[in-house]
Length: 329
Image 1 (cartoon, rainbow, N blue to C red):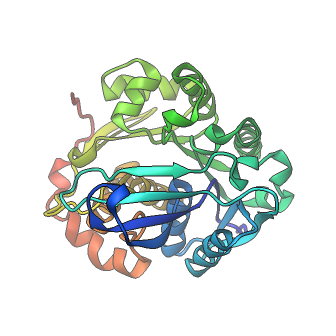
Image 2: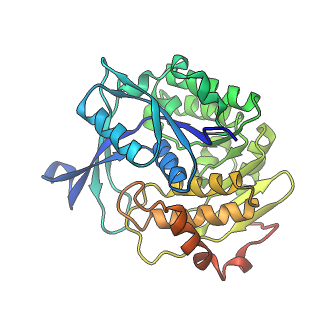
């Protein structure tokens, strides 16, 4: 078995989370954490027992040291994270939203160290990983990071490794919506497992129905498409079957950020363990539901012990909602 189970890459920023409700301009106290969709997934997979390598760049500053220290404490192999003496570590401010609404986030990442990722950042040994997880965020950061994303995904797929891709759209980082759609779909065509949200899929493909969105990506070369439907669960489609998996009920939504990352953790981990697609989507929904019940982007991601202790109980009784050939929306 490969020494590296999973390779993930992208930008991890320092995050300052408001300690009180209200406008960010009025908040006086913040708690320092880390943020990054790609590293959220990497951390979640590490907590489930996978050996995860993280590829990125940080500045030669205190925030960069904080990012690396935090990721290493979460079990990630950060030996391939470059320290950039010329460009800073990105950071963000995040509001507190106790009512379950989406928090306000302000980014300070333009020209960051991670935006200078390039093909030269790819160490040959990283290509021995069993699986690559990619998102649409690094290619939005810069032309060089976009080139690296294409190179990594192409080389891993050509080497027979499995590749997953979450569009994770960030429209404000692209020059235009059309460029975003074109480049994201080019990247998705290199993945075996494509994981869009419903609104993302509609924007990227022009189709409304989840079945048609999934068919679009299957035609581009994907083997599995899993479409996130928020609290309603998820729809999946392969070349042989399709289905709808109901969402896991949540009593109180604390923080919606990170739910999609939790979904990716569940799906990828289960598929790498050779579970069925239906089971993988069940696990994905469950981990996504845990994520929204915790404050912070990755605090709700479970350990392997927690997953085995809680997952079966959480989805018991929902088996009847798993439909082999569902027609929805």
